[in-house]
Length: 389
Image (cartoon, rainbow, N blue to C red):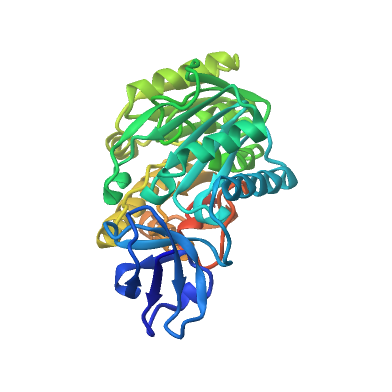
């Protein structure tokens, strides 16, 4: 087997468990490895580091799959996926969950979401993509699913020399799936929806709003398919307005509201949140609860400052729309903006809005997306509720 030797001076994160090895950390490669092949990795002193898949076409030359010398084969992936499933069962995520969360489940660049008896997978690196058939085989063996779909239509695959594709990995099935969450029902479009079709990472956070929305006039911005807003109506809000720039998402959100017989309380309109929130502040509009769940503002370190400016501005507008004593519910899914920086940004927004805030709750993503300390990309979602005076 090809052996990869690391330089003497490498980042401490590799010793501490981080599975990524960058090209500038490799001293030499002994043997002939094709892109995507499994290799053995050694430290400069010849001690064993781990086993992983290799791709010299990527900035990340090796992603480690194991810290032990073991055979990486179909059975290896079966064991890893079974281990991931045992964790979800222990933590109570069974019906709908992120079954595999990449590095956090020791399967870097693999995402598997479970929607009832259907699965959506993403293989985001060449080395993982090569094991796609083994992954499908493991899912069929463990779950006997009704269907498996791949959503590999993501730009990041281009960094690995992979094409963007999506489609069925089993016999075709209806790609609109009905799921249950917190006593509500939602349509999930696994073929055309964002990411894998639904944001499972907020499922616990959607319950966190239940007390603050009772009897409230609620505004939700960047609603996507309306899950937070429909939860607000379910939890006793007086009225809920949700806005999103996507007409397709708004149509799905209104269908979801009708599905739950809550369309007399909650409605959705296609609008550009950045523009209308600014205008509504000028108009003097006020709500008891304002909920903001914007998309990631940056995917590169070079534009972090721009992202912070964007988060500050949108939260400033949100606070100005909250009646004194009301609540702001705000999220960020940008993993490059770490929790402390996010909280500082909200504090700056409050200062500029001349509003006093106090924290009600501050949470991360649901526990089916476990966080590994030292792997910042696993600690990506920030969810905050503050009272605004």
